[in-house]
Length: 128
Ligand SMILES: [Zn+2]
Image (tube, rainbow, N blue to C red; front, side):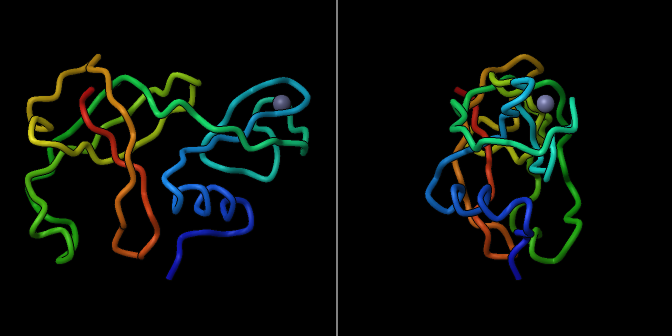
């Protein structure tokens, strides 16, 4: 079952193409994530999907050593990080790559997409 709903369908469609997109408010210019039907800053409803650079920095992280679901058993240990994107929005995502466990706060990261357990393509980040 897909995670997409009316507000996020366009986000997941872009993710399926390997593109990270955010909503930009036509009224105040705020860039937001996760997708919403209105601007969380000024409440206007006119939002335009824009391509993100896919670059960001690690704001914080944790290392998951015990799988939360059986589907994750083959993945532990893995890193879940809070990423501050260049455009501003914060994303919580898995950090991938051979050096993921060496992560430090402030590390530069770039986005890629991998299939999640629900079949949607989900953003993951790796150290730049
Ligand atoms: Zn706004």
